[in-house]
Amino acid sequence: MKMRLDLRLSQKLIMTPQLQQAIKLLQLSRLELQQTLSQHLMENPLLEEVQTDTEVEEPEADAAEEWEQSQQSKGTSEQQESPESGKSEDAEKPDEISQGSWDDYFDNDRIAGGRESSPSNQEELPSYEQTLAKPTSLEEHLLWQLALTEMSDTEKMIARAIIGNIDDDGYMRTSIEDIAADAKVPTESVESALRQVQSFDPAGVGARDLPECLLIQLGFLDRNSVGTPARRSGSLKGSLVESIVRFHLKDLEKKQYARVAKALDTTVEAVVEAMHVIEGLEPKPGRPYFSANNYAIIPDVFVVKNEGEWTVLLNDDGLPRLRISPYYKQMMSGSLKEDSDAARVYMDEKYRGAQWLIRSIEQRNKTILKVVRSIVKFQEAFFEKGVQHLKPLVLKQVAEDIGMHESTISRVTANKYMYCPQGMLELKFFFNTALQRTDQSQDALSSVTVREMIKNMIAEEDTQHPLKDEEIAAKLQSHQIIIARRTVAKYRSEVNIPSASQRKRFF
Image (cartoon, rainbow, N blue to C red; front, side):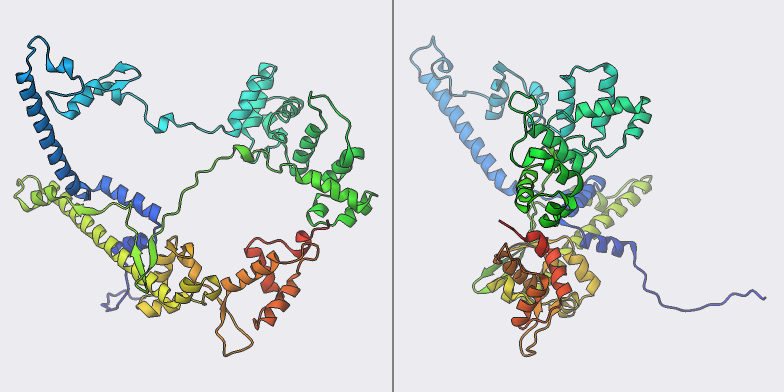
């Protein structure tokens, strides 16, 4: 085998690092973009945020300064004309400030906690966020009850380990054997401590599965107001509810009441009465103590009607407006010392990075506007009349309309929202498949419109005789919509609507 060197010419499409970063910037959501820009502001000294209210504040500051000087001169002339030389003007008019600026006045006379404090003391006060009330978590609530319980130190140690393994729903997902091995105690001690924890509020906490959680709550229902066991009444008599919870929860979920009544040798009415008792129980006892941080969705664009035409407005409120710092720009244009080559290289690199970021943000905004304007053009009937007139649309149609690639349209529409007269909608909402009609002369319907029709049919159905998927498909076909039963079941599950057997009401 002979080795040799050859020269070959070829062409390749290579994505530069700048292009890769621009694509990444394009698909960021609004929150992620804010975080990215804040990170660049901290890392790049040549970048600075444009303060839009600077021009408004300066005239107000000048006017306040002129008014202050006029008040000082007025107070000085009145003090000189005062006939009583033994009394100063400050004693007669304590509200007027004869010297110093208003900032000095408020800094010196600010009251905090009933005492005069200096500006340095003000900085030591806690921030507003530190003074906000924090909701009590489930773990804190259980530990508070544990501190009030008469138990030995060992038992409290085991109980704390159990509480630490309770999830947000209130269930203990760790086995007793694992807790006993970690705490190096017998399993009987863990079981005893677990029973004690299961007696805490909320009822059902510390259960290992749903039946145990419901049984614990049933135990609380069998106690009267003074906490002693009471006789069961109604559907609880004869442990009917307990039997259903232990052995027939699956049948109860499918509403197979006749099957449960036959297995327990009772009537369907008694099973329905027991079902109402079970419905009043809490399957997730930790729900009242679960607090999630809900963030409001801020739209990326607004679609409004102006003079009979739909207009797309970019929402740049809250996003920092970037520019290259004039100070560093002037420094780079000047002459640097000969021994500052490293500083010059650093400044050039940061300058190019700042220019790229500003251009990429401008290109991102232009691309979003192009895509949304194309969507509005295709879906104008939706903005005028509502969801029933939403048309089928795919990424390829928008890409061909504005002359971009489908992958670019997919990145633009990811995690971005539009606010329009129909509400707050994700850009992906407008892209859906088409369902054909039996009459080819009519336009195809979008899958979103068909799902809305299914929701309306189920909302108007008879609860004692709910519509089955075959019946819904037949009704849609009467509206000249070609659809299969399994497609109806798919759309029904997508909007979280249970099956006909689960929607059925007997009484």
